Image 1 (cartoon, rainbow, N blue to C red):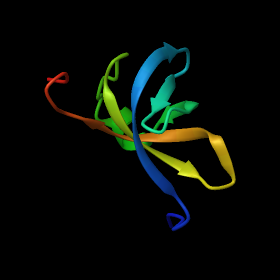
Image 2: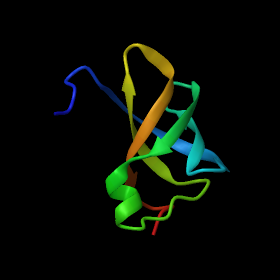
Image 3: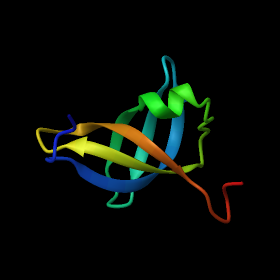
Image 4: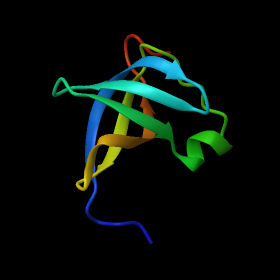
Length: 77
């Protein structure tokens, strides 16, 4: 069961790191380390630097997060 204490925020992928990790610049200016959620991995959704993403973060550790959605828009097709 999913925890209800998650913070969802949008950001932009700055750098792709090994092991499906990404450095994400959040809309509030913070830089965090994020990994890809299981559904994105299963459906082979590619995430590259410059993509806008939605990130879930735990209120206990605000330096790490999970990418839950790749947002489509003007820059992402």
